[in-house]
Length: 395
Image (cartoon, rainbow, N blue to C red; front, top):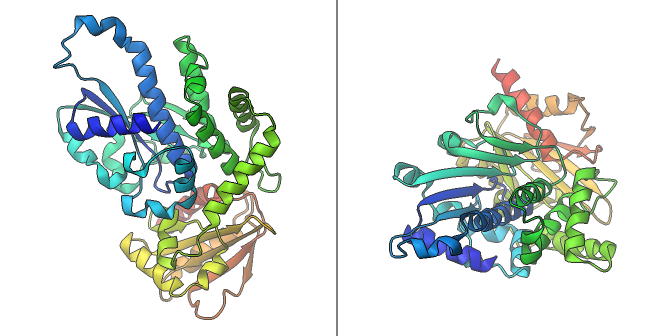
């Protein structure tokens, strides 16, 4: 993997390619997003090599002028903020991937690429709705793989855009399925998975973390997730599958939850998404714990201003020793809109988040705080509700 990334980065810097396909993860840059972008890019490059059969055509081409297509995974986070993605940093390092060989969003000028004569394609993984900053990419999107509920209202892509959208626990499940299907088409079946075990392991790690090792309390894992995990484990020939799954989950959770050195401002950048003018950060600690950090609400206000948002929807969780999820809605000053969003979420019933209002503590004026009793609900379930709220609020 690291060799592929280094070679691809060098070709990108030297413009030594005939066509470029960018595999773009989502803006939270969590492990699922990072792994699916990296692994799918490497797979597509491998597939390209199989189809082109370069060895067969080498004697018939001018090597001095020949240029290939390249597949570039882009992590949608600033390079300087990558260290905040603690579980991603840990997992990639554990699999021999150097940060220096990665491409972050501020390493590449996509607008400039599109303006050049080079053919450019965009593949979206782990999301199917472009953030505002990427609206201009819609005409160039050729493929989408995502595990979120399908949002038809924001679908502005070409008719021939390929898509694999299915509500499962992890996007890595769908990417692995797509890789299996494409491999079968060229009669290579499991060749990629066996030749590049680091990619197989990365997909396995992402699914285990996203489904919390198929925890019944979280209830995110689906039969499709389980099918793919068992397929990957058969490739890896794991002796004790249950012990390995538990070990992976423990190590990744420890890495993700190791945020004690991070300031409130850094936590606001660790895992965040934007829905309209609502900022939705997700913390690996309870929101109540975040609010106790020095300057917490000031950090939220600064993040809102920086991202041109008016409301913060803060989501927190702790998986052990006791499973806990909590939520806060915050708007600087006396925000009528924040109050309405808080009530909208509290009244939502499809299904209910079961939000129990509690006192957020001293110094939290303008903050609506809730203990979330319906544990399966994650940010994926909150985002469509926020979209509906914004539409009704505008009306």
